[in-house]
Image 1 (cartoon, rainbow, N blue to C red):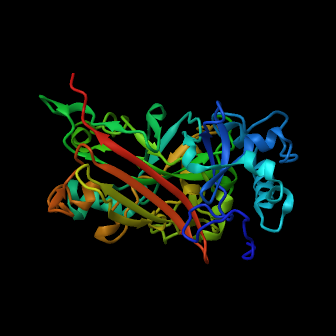
Image 2 (image 1 turned 135 degrees about the vertical axis):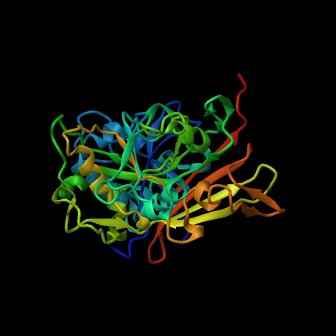
Image 3 (image 1 turned 60 degrees about the vertical axis):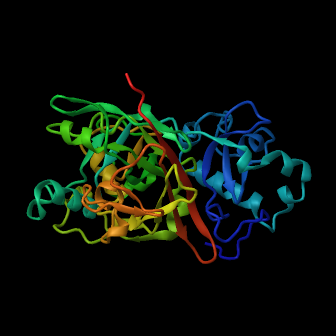
Amino acid sequence: MNSELRSFVEVAPDSHFSIFNLPYGIFKHPTQGDLRVGVAIGSLVLDLAELEQRSVLGNIGASTPVFSNSSLNHFMALGRSSWTAVRKRVTELLNSECPELQDDKTLREAVLLNQEDCEMQLPVEVSDYTDFYSSRFHATNVGTMLRGADNALQPNWLHLPVAYHGRSSSLIPSGTNIRRPLGQLGPETYGPSRAIDFELEMGFFVGAETRLGEPIPVARAADHIFGMVLVNDWSARDIQKWEYVPLGPFLAKNFATSLSPWVVTSDALAPFRRPLPAQDPAVLPYLHWENDCTYDIELQVFLTPEDGNDRVQISHSNFQYLYWSIHQQLAHHTVNGCNVRVGDLLASGTISGPDKNSRGCMLELSWKGEEPIQLPGNNQRVFLNDGDRVTMSGFCQGDGYRVGFGEVTTKLLPAISD
């Protein structure tokens, strides 16, 4: 990485969107009637659709326009060589030593827009969504609550990345409020869930598809991964407790999953690779890659009560706490020949750490309600109240700069009575 690289766009040191990041998103601007692809830089959005229409981007390997679209799927489908070409060209255009965009006032005003004026959308059209269960700390905590410390982990957990198939239709962008869901809470009990929880997760998008019957070797998994987002996997714990036997999550999980709007590419995350935690027992050969890695991504969760003005940080975790890597997740997902498509989302599962303040959900933070979370003004929470807003944030810290994901924020509204 060129540590001397600087953008001519002013970027604060604590901004998530430095020139070393350049994440992609889908936005709508008041002066543009259509959805289009943009790149975040500081507090601005660089309009790639406009640059493409003006033939400024050059040859990116596309025969038709890809940035005047309502999702990133068309761009992702071009493959890694095009991903690299666009990133290189955008970096060049924003470089403080490049006059092409910097000195062209007309072009600059046409393609650099204020983020606060842009309405962000889901960045990807997701065809399938799989949610993993890859934090050993989280799985141990939940297993301890359910089965006791001696039987916390199920026999298979240390041998394979456990997952379930989620619901892509209820994926929602940051800023979309949700309703408290209704459901069965017991054999003769129906009504609004009394135990709404967030789950601090991250997810990655598949950028290269496979054919049915074609596994992805773990050492080649990175070739299929476009980038990552923050994920809030909303959960109704009381509905989940009643329904999950024998087939796992259903209505407790499929009512909403919130995603952050900016996709941080695997290229931007590369400087923050870290060794994968030791795995014992040794994994089977199809899950072993000597260069496997995780990422040093700081993660935070904030709660803003409806009756409060300030948000309170209630969790501080890190992506490195995951036991299973994203490469192992993708390799395991496809080892049986399951094909993946461009835009598929694979989420990590709740990311919890070894300390109480690094737990990634209310169930753990309040230890199933036995240890209420203390908030200012003598407020307490066991689970979420109506009106509560949950905001998640994540970033990698470089030397004087950040590569961040921005935020995913959602407010919980009261249930709609039937």
